[in-house]
Amino acid sequence: MDLTELIILTKALFVAGGIVMPPLVLCILLLWYGLGYRFWVMKEPKWMGVRDMLKYYQEHNEKPAKNIVARAIKQGLEFRKKGVKNLRRHLDAAFYEYEREIGKFSVLIHVVILISPLLGLLGTVIGMIETFDSLATMTLHSQSGGIAGGISQALFTTQMGLTVAIPGLLAHSILNRKQQQIEQDLEQVKDILCHQTTVKKFSEK
Image 1 (cartoon, helix red, strand yellow):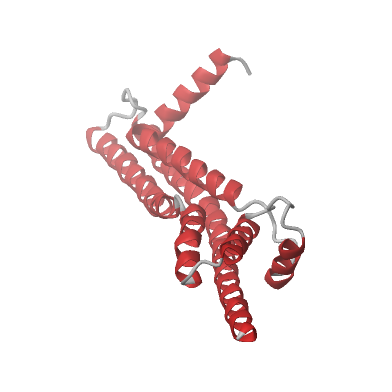
Image 2: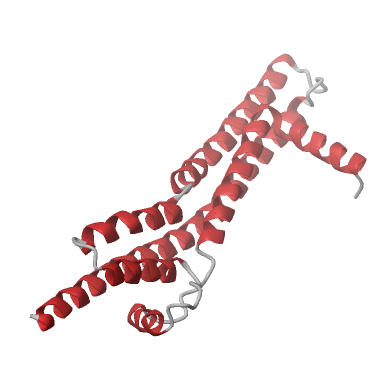
């Protein structure tokens, strides 16, 4: 498909969807940009449990971190090695950046998923208004397509709204579950590091 055919196809798509097509296309771009970013941030799988990862990086500190939890573990071990006071407070502040990173664009994706079907419904209403207007005035072959054009626009925009929302909702749910798991892992890292530090202090007394 060359550029000319792509332009013609895009123009036909906008004509078929009517006035709600530009915001729907914008929703598609925003949705998949946000989903792509979140997937990229959380793409690396957790290849072992949190305790095993802590033990691994304690013994192999020179190894690169393979995911967000591993990066957090290495940073936590650095804090403990430096002997910082109020370790929990430092870990909370440092890990907050990881929590922000995995949660970025979550609200935007949720909003797009909510408004996409509503935009499709708006297109449906506009299309049906055009259909009934054609029936009332008996303009069966109006410039915008009359009855056929109105019904086509109504069905097409409904389809587009659902096409945006349903895959986005499924992908968003999967990423949210992964985000919750990472947040639980980060909390476990903080608990283990603080517990080990406390035990070490008592053993030294």
